[in-house]
Image (cartoon, rainbow, N blue to C red; front, side, top):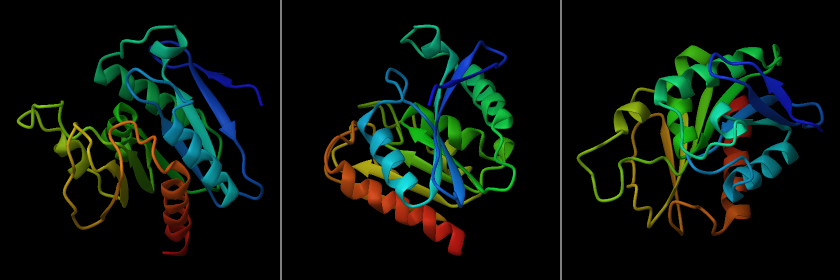
Amino acid sequence: MRPRTIRTPHGPARAHLHAADDPTAVLVLGHGAGGGVSAPDLAGVTKAAVARGVSVVLVEQPYRVAGRRSPAPAAQLDAAWIAVVEQLDFPALPLICGGRSSGARVACRTAAATGAAAIVCLAFPVHPPGRPEKSRLGELDGVKVPVLVVQGDRDPFGMPPKRRGRKLLVVEGDHSLRKGVATYAEAVADWLVSLDAA
């Protein structure tokens, strides 16, 4: 299926729909700062979620669509993300937002604005490598809906603590989450399905 171009206040974004048969929810995922929607963790979670009846939309931010690798400022990322989510047409389905790394931060910051029922964070960057004093935990802690974080046990961007309402799945690997994709993707899909039963 061809990607859909969606207008945002900061240029066109692209949405790649992976539709499930008779879906029970929709998962909207954003990419990392320097990567795209073909990252192994995004691809693995997409495949597992669709197989479990959750449609997935992978969103390319406008700066990537324009061919730039350097990410836009946070406010622009958030505004573009909200604009995309508002224009997706899944009125009867629960909306779950998320992403990898920078995309996870965007999903957390905009959780209330998008009306997300839950958030999936793949490799949430708790702090820049070697700079624990520059914590971004406030973005994660500010989410008021259920959160699943998949984090590599050797991630130089840190490890978020467990807390009420947040499930932490620690897997072998670093920030790329390239190891054991099929296994943790199934766990993410299981969690998505469990939300519907809750």
